[in-house]
Image (cartoon, rainbow over all chains, first blue to last red; front, side, top):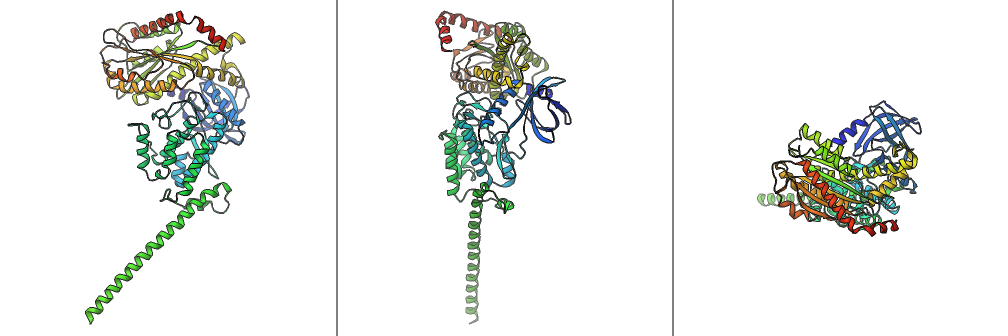
Length: 337
Length: 245
């Protein structure tokens, strides 16, 4: 707390300041603060008419460590999970040398905000994307580590999930570098803090639970019992229970396995998120890429199902009215005669 | 390659010392022996006063360690973060010294161009994963700490979970102050597992005084006695290490 405070003030930069790199002499104009974490502050900045994100920290080693991760991400073909690295440098500020790196600016709401705005039908799609990206990351020997909704940004125009903070990314087999309790396997007493694929998948399962409990919840008894209880209490989570529990137990050996089961669960179960707003998909309308096509099927079939249900309800009401009217007519005739 | 161990004292307290030697001087003594002293100040509803704060920062500063003030709820995460941070700091210090020997005087990691730094960082990371770590935990059990002790216990179990995920070996020892008879009491001797704490912690009694200085001094002797015991045995141990590198 206190350290964060002092750290914050040391690399606190006001909008309009110009940051000049000591080694590469690139000039960045700071526009605004985007956020801060345990290891530094991220700013939105302008560089040669493009917007970039600048991460600054007075702890040069954590910057170097993150740069190492981003560099090795760049070598992974087709992976778009993390931001791409643009520049690494030092800045001689009045308070002393501050290390920073510039990366691609990933714009959009975080995962929970996005799902809140656009409807729950998106959550499965995004989880499928996330699992796909995680698989690529795992295949290259890494574990993301500090996976949480705040670190997941959904960019447009075709919604795509991206990760923005690689501070926790750890080589497989080592101890997890950084984590957040709610998404941490060790905190819930369900495993070690050794970086393996199942560690990330546990976090994905917790994020799924998080979508139904936006404010999270505290550990009481801990363990699988409390988490199962939490899943059972939310009807949005129930259809996914099988996948979530399996991931919490660490029973998936890789992300693709979890992805396949999640997908088959969603395709089988028509009743996922029954009270959804389907119009979300309609707004995108005519020009849809193939990627989005898959999920579109889902709400459409649900719509027809609902319409049919509505029709049968109407039919019921009308027949009852007619029946009662008939009885009344018979009654009147009887009285008249 | 650096094959030594990293030695740390982790002091968990909620206020100022009021008996015995100056804890800041004792922390400096620890640093002289290559042992860093980290301090975590735990608050609950109460706030640590100015004097307590200055002492906490002072101990960490002169002990070459890290200090942090937290609310009890955040203790678990802080304990592991502070330990890790202090460990990296020590390793960085060692790497910096090596660099100075190779590159000449005032060169540190920060003076290297960013491209070169990455390789050095990989070495630091690697060492942090594999180096042997000894942490002596000093818990303040003065009266005001009483209701915070269950949280402290949770945090320590969590710490062993974090550190035991590393490839390198860990040794923990736990001391409390004030003890039943003396200023300081050893409640857990050097062990790689902290799980046995659970039963011991529930029986702890809390007392009035806060002899932080004497506690740090006693902790130091514990490191030393451990070393002298080891030195009897480690004669061929070391050569084995060299061979395996």
